[in-house]
Image 1: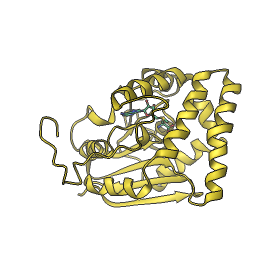
Image 2: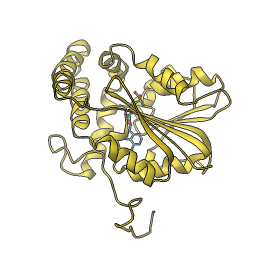
Image 3: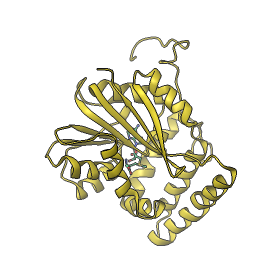
Image 4: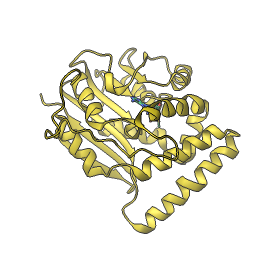
Length: 258
Ligand SMILES: C[S@@+](CC[C@H](N)C(=O)[O-])C[C@H]1O[C@@H](n2cnc3c(N)ncnc32)[C@H](O)[C@@H]1O
C-alpha cells in the first residue's frame, strides 16, 4: 500500500490497532514504537525467566506441541516473526533439524542478542510491517505473543501472507482473557499484581517488572479474538480458525490460498 491512497471502505485497508493508545506509557503511536523497543531491549536478559514464571515452566513444551499440531514438519522453511529471544524458533529448530530451515526476525537488538546466545540460526533485525524477504518464500510463519505490539494488524498480516508460499501456513500464538468473570478476576490479579512483583523480586530489575505490567495492560486492552480472525480473513488468509487451550491460550491458524 506504500505510496497509494487508502480506501477506508475496503476492510482489507482499514487500520486495526491491536489495542488503543495506552496513555499510562505513551501519548501517541509515534511514541509507542520507541517505548516498545526500549522495553524489550532493556528487559531482554530477563525475558526467558519471566516467561517461564508466567507459564509455570510449560511455555517451551507448549510451543513445540502447537507447532507440531499445526503441521510443521521436516523439509519446511519457517520464519519466526517477533522471535524475541527465540523461544518459538528454538522449538521449530528442534523439529526441523536443518541449518537455515528456521529464520528469526525481531526489531529489538537486545532480544536478538539473547537469541544469538541460545540458537545458531539466521537472525534478522526488522519488523513485521516490512519483512525483508521475497514473495512466496516460506512454508510456515509463526508469531508468538507479539501481535499486541503491531501498529496495524492488517498491515502485519498482509506482509505475513506475502512472504508465505501458496499453501503456506500462519500460526499466531496469543494469551486471551478468560471469558468468565471469575476467570478474568483471577487472571487479572495474577498478571497485573503478582507476576510483575515476582519478576521484580526474582530479577532485581525494574525493567522486568515494567515489561510484565505492560504485558498485562496490552492483554487487557487487546481487541477480541473475532476481530483478529476477521483481519486474518480480510488480509487474504483462508481456512482461518482459532483454537483455544485451557481457556487462555489462543492459536490462530490460516493458509495462503494455493
Ligand atoms: C513478548 S515477545 C515474544 C517473543 C517470542 N516470540 C516468544 O514466543 O516468547 C514480543 C516480541 O515482539 C517484538 N516486536 C515488537 N514490535 C514488533 C514489530 N513491529 N515487528 C516484529 N516484532 C516486533 C519485540 O521486540 C519482542 O521481541
